[in-house]
Length: 224
Image (cartoon, rainbow, N blue to C red; front, side, top):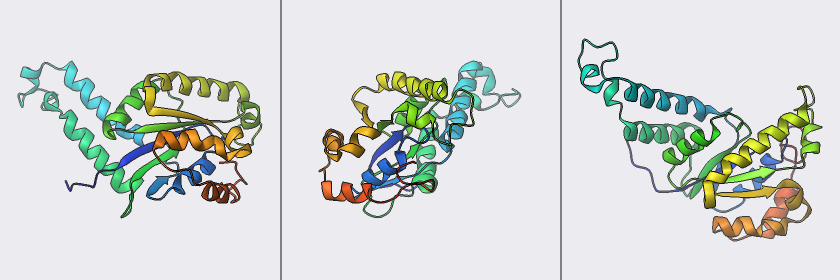
């Protein structure tokens, strides 16, 4: 497996219609940054693959499973480190596709609602060493009123539960997570200075304001 140049990883955690496409644009205005958009939780499939290997490895009797007559022959030697390395290589080659000069890569996703979210976040941090997370929220009443949510049962309650789950899971991330609020940085882009300081990047207000002036998301300005 070919070696790749060291780089940092940042992921945007949020829910639909939180302004995350706009936030992705802001972060991509930083020189050397390349965050991709949503992938419909594709990494969850790799998480399930990896977890299955670990669960079955722990379940079998290693001495017996190492014999070719055993129905689970070979699973006792499932290589955790090799699995993580190849998952990272696959994700970089297919989902992230960093370009020459990319210093920071990752993606934004709106599907962080599974009950095992803390375990999934731990998996992402194993796959992407040093990964950090930007947790983006928005006024929930505005989110729930969008056409993305209105056809669902109890849209406000649903969005509130998702936000609470994300916030709860984020507590275990410690300094690896930073929370921003859409309504705050759209009203006053200078509030992003804390985020940029946390990222170790210079806040270019002109670049950010240029992004803010550009429509994001196919459903309209600042809706993604």
